Image 1 (spheres, one colour):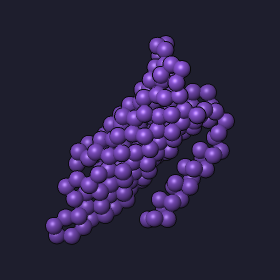
Image 2: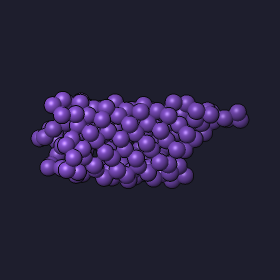
Image 3: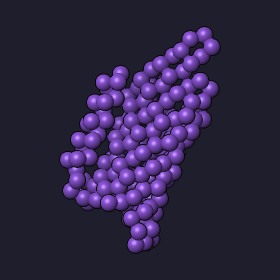
Image 4: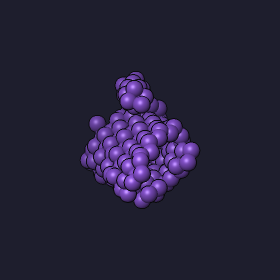
Length: 159
């Protein structure tokens, strides 16, 4: 399993390194997963690979709740659409997810890993004259036996 995680992270880093033709940003975020009502923190890198199109590798760690530990590694595509309002953009999200779940129960533990899909949308507000922006995302994480909605609020710095 650790090899799978390392492989996914290296692949995501490779995509980001190959795609440095445009703007890129790094973000910190707070997350909420609907399954077991778990709160978490995460980090996301957004790399523009074509006009309006960017890839967004992401890692989310959910805090232990009711004996459940969870983390996700995601690789999403985002298509940025201007709204006409200064600094305000929206974007659909589609991508892949790898999720690791571990549950410590009274009579044993249960651990499983799932690969699935992400589908959702996001909104971002770029502060005029500043490299700082805020973003919010809502997506459905489609996994066998563990489909959930994920809500994200974050701040990012554009390079």
